Structure formats: C-alpha cells, structure tokens
Length: 180
Image (cartoon, rainbow, N blue to C red; front, top):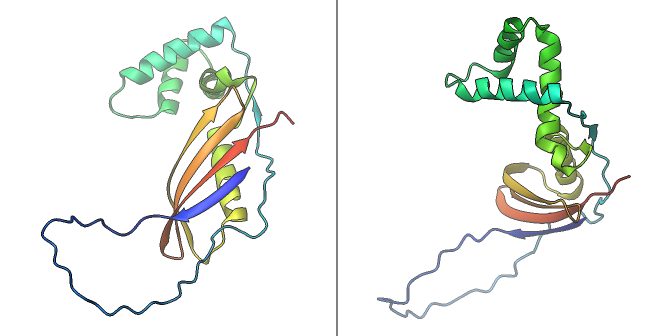
C-alpha cells in the first residue's frame, strides 16, 4: 500500500488586472511542517471476505421478479417489506426469501470480480482501519472519499478528504489485493 498526504489548497488566486503595488514590510516566520501520516505505516490488512453465492436459474428468476418490483416502487417502502409481500404472493417463506435475496443481490452485484468479495460493511471497516492506523491527529474527521477498482490488476485506488485537527487534507493510496 502506498500512502501519501498533502494539505488542501486554501488560498485564492487574484487577478492581475486593476491591482496596485504597495510596499509592505514582511516578517518571515518559520512554518513548522506537520505530517499527518504515521511514522510507521501499516500496510497489511485482513478485511472480512465473503464467499458469494453461486447463482442458479431459480436465483436469477427471483432476482428479476424482486428487482422489477423494487424498481417500480416510488414510495421507498423498503426492500424487506417488498420481498415479504412477494414471498406471500408466491407461497414462499418470507424470512427464507429475504435471506436468499440478500445473497442473490451480493452475488449479482459483486460476482463479476470472482467468487469472493469485500462487501460494503467490510469495505467501510477496512477504510476506517486504514485511516486509524496510518493517520495521526487529535481529531480526524472523514468528509468524503472515492475509490476505483482495477479488477485486472487487483488494485483499488482510494482518495479521502479529511479534516485533521481542523485542517483539510486530501490523501490518496493504492490497495493491492492478494488472494491470500
């Protein structure tokens, strides 16, 4: 993993039009540079990895039925309520269909990357762990982030915007995924 950090730009560029030069006495102060990156960087993490369900024809049929209904709903009543209603219509056990639905969705959405995946909750835990172990400060607040998976090279490129002790920073790092 490669980890680097820099502060976000806070100054504004001024236009050169309609400016007046004024002689100003300047006092030069030494600026203490402070790194938010830990002196010893943790580079190995073991996120929770889930084996995805092997999708059957029946699973794909359930996916089509349920996703079609969910996409048609505009009142945001929730997945679970809708899946329970569908289960009752088809004479299925609502709890069992709900459990199967969750596995089907994970396999459908993450299956392009192989038989295993780091699901959303585990991914969020991983991002938190990476920041906690490698960023130093009294108060660290995560304001936004994005990531891009390069499935061919098994790498994820991650960017975060943070406030560390009241100052904005942007950090970028690369995660190399291994099959072990």
